Amino acid sequence: MSAISTALPVLSADGGLAKYLREIRSFPVLQPEEEYMLAKRWQEHEDVDAAHRLVTSHLRLVAKMALGFRHYGLPLADLISEGNLGLMRAVKKFDPDKGFRLATYAMWWVKAALHEYVLSSWSMVRLGSVAAHKKLFFNLRRVKAKLRIFDADGLSSDDVKRIAHELDVPEAEVQLMNQRLAARDSSLNTPVSADITVERQDLLVDDRANQEVQLAEHEEARLGSRLLAEGLKILDKRELDILTERRLRENPLTLEELGTRYGVSRERIRQIENRAFLKLQQAVMAAAAQQPGGLEAAG
Image (cartoon, rainbow, N blue to C red; front, side, top):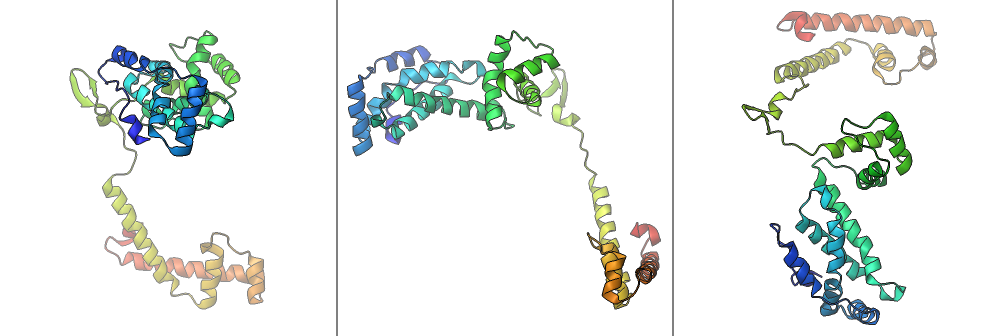
């Protein structure tokens, strides 16, 4: 289909709408029998000339549909171009034996192409592609006009409920989409005001810790891990196992379970655990005191 697009009339981005509409009106509307034969030639023989005639005879349909999306503030030339791509996909997949006209089939492809283009171009922050988001994006203005809702100062809770009920979507989604549609993206490099050189990004607050704090925390954690590993070496095998199972596991074993493992009472396990922990604590503190900066260096 790439060869088809090179022969299509071109709508320039800087105007020329009237010229483009005159050019596409020069392509005749196909009669049902002629459309069927052209579609069969493309379907069975991939006749590019037949596909070209099918496309050009429906360019007016695309232009009319694209004009309906002008209020989204996107270049009309781009809207028509995206709609034409949807038309070409429709021609490529059209089956004339299904019994309906190409225009009926192509409308869905053109509308889908326009929807995707508007959604992807509206904001650098993706608005979402789920059905609820699309329904809101393309119907919110219409429903607000139908319900005579004018929200210069934002939607009231009652208005949100009415719109959510009308479109059968969550109220929170209505509020969020209305806010998104009310304010387009703004560059972080935009000056705060005309007479101030400070940019928006200069006023953003960074909640992360500075590099010095991050480095100190990293070094402290690494030292703590090393001191703990060294301290565990002073425990005998049973103390190490019980302390590990009781205090170093994500899901610690119970005193009863460890008592069964070693054939002693749960009270005896508790005593061994406490003794092992005390030995470990003393070993770590003694090792930390020998570090540069003493105990403060180990946290």
